[in-house]
Image (cartoon, rainbow, N blue to C red; front, side, top):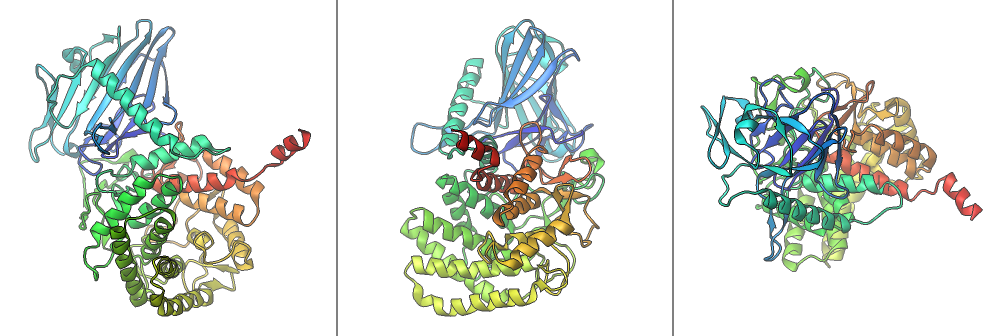
Length: 601
């Protein structure tokens, strides 16, 4: 495994990763955070996979059907060609606004030409491969069940000979065929025609969704692919947005920075919602706000930094010691102990989204009242706790500190609450809030600035630089032209930029100096260059960064400084939301080449 050369398919209920050679190497059913049924990604010996084996004379290529989440893997040997269309069904039902999105994967095989031959490797390992999985042929399907421990089952339907499929025998493709993998036993008979109909319906669903996304003169393809990926990472039923579709993909090979990201971080999700709703997708934003309303039932209940996708509040962390991990990187973790951390920035990030939604979209009166109650609750929490240290945006697992980013976002919380109060005609609340807003602002300007570094730094009284302070400008705390911000951008470039990629920070954390770049930080830096007027440098750096994506334009959490290999959980919502923001900003820049063209004409 040299890189995360995977495509993702999904239906806003679960997702699967398929390698560039067409092997299904990661899938959890029936939902994103369920136990895996294929986990070769985390153990290439016992994890389990579902792929197509062809001779070395075949060339294999992969693409998405444009503007959809349908992945096409093409196998070609001269005129012997077939294509596999991988997708999870998702389409609108006739009645109302309901969607059909079963815990199914369809692998539709199209015979293109000639007499292509292949073998099937079908090796499911249920429940994270903790115990043996028994797979047997039944008249209508192939069924796999766990042999001991927790009971689980998986059904495979196909138009091909089931004995040849399970035995890995050579099969010659003569017509279009199908596989349907399901968590549930099907009631009705499955056919190739039905699989094709599901393919077309799902294609129409994604094409319609993409059509509602604005077009941009530049980087449109990248914006659409990122938006489609973010949509797949949203849980349609509850409104939660996942940080990523995987667990335990390491930030650095062979180290222990391996975390489960199949949860809803308030920070990541709110940032995603802000970007996706700015693209016009109101439904995703409304569902997420309802998710927030649902998880804060009591006025005095503090907001956790993260929740389960079904609103779970306890996310107990365990290790799966029987799995050797991605590229041997142990431990493999499920659950995430970070849910118990305090991170004061989440209040500002959430208030920013609430403000955006109230400004931008019509919201029902009931919803407005609930959001106003949450707004007042957030102001109360910030007033009581903004002066306290926390774990910060990077979730340091050791000491708490007065992180600049957390303080700035406390300011954002009060600033947006004041704006919301004015919009909703509740200005009588604002006088005390304005005093608090000024107090926090003055505190930051006084204590976060380092004379030595001539920059805003990671924490009060520190000279360490941190990429997160670049967000002071996008959140409206400081103007892009303010000399202090310009100097901060320059200082961060000098200290944290390495071979066109950024460190989050360089001071040693709980695990030592990172050897990989946190992808979103480089996007933040490019945006900062754009904001302070360094457009040429920003565009050059952006093009370079885009070249580090995988073959399908997807990004993970991290990029190795030396090899530029993708690392960390995948695909990462954080990376793709920042890609969209940066691409939209830079699409407005007129390059010298364009100016010459205009002058000539």
